[in-house]
Amino acid sequence: MPRKKASSKISAQAKRPAPSVRDRLMEPGRKFSNSELMVVRVLLANYPAAGLTTVSKLAKQAQVSDPTALRVAQRLGFDGFAGMQEALLGEVETHMRSPLTLSDAKPSRQPNVYQAFFAATLAQCEAVARETATADYERAVALLTDPRMQILCLGGRFSRFVAGILQRCLFHMREGVALLDANAADQVDELAGIGKRHVLAVFDYRRYQADVIRFAEQAKGRGARIVLFTDSWKSPVSVFADTTITAPVATASPFDTLVPPLLQVEAVAAAVAKRLGADWRSRAALLEEVRVENHVTLDNFTTSPRNGKHRRKPA
Image (cartoon, rainbow, N blue to C red; front, side, top):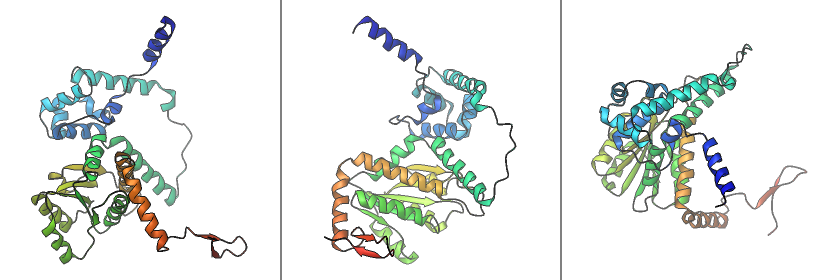
């Protein structure tokens, strides 16, 4: 390589900022053990403050040992916990100096109920993007794309609709996907066929549903793998789930919002499609072919600009 090009490349690399601690935590492909992942979740949930405490306090918050918290810092590429804290302090200092972070002195207008709801819910969606560990998504996607496994989706009174969306997305991309949405007696019967070749995707948000928890616990006892979607307080299913994806659901409404969980489901569906590659397209094409034959969609219809009525396109 010519000296001029080599020096310019070195200069460009020197100017490139080092990845933040959050970037390292969220980097795809990082392998964390189950206990290490508990530390990662605590760090993301209260970033950067959680990493600026002592090792013992962080470990206590994550309910793991001190050496586990130390290993996380090392897995992120730091010599030790002090190195990670130094990087976090540097981020805080940079943020405090930046003019972009100075608050606007203009008085804010009180939003109406709609704008208040949108603002609160969008803030929760941003929290999902910042605080959910990439490793949790990767574990869920690995289970949902395993061709040896049958996928079952289960939710509660409200969350069953989000479970249904996951099921429909997966159904377009792979075989062996079902939604458990029968009456209580018939749903119990489904337990008889569940075993080690099943993945149960469970949606359970406060107030947690006893029948959903009971079904998941029995499915786990029969050998099924559990992917749990829940809120920040975590359903009791989290105690035995193989992977847990949490979302904040409180908003400016008497009802918890399911927008962040839906966002997570669609992100998981996008990752499933990417992991399956071209394999899912042949199945999707077959489904479209069958729908066209049975006139399921209105693809062959258009709207007349004169009267707004539908008419069939010429063949």
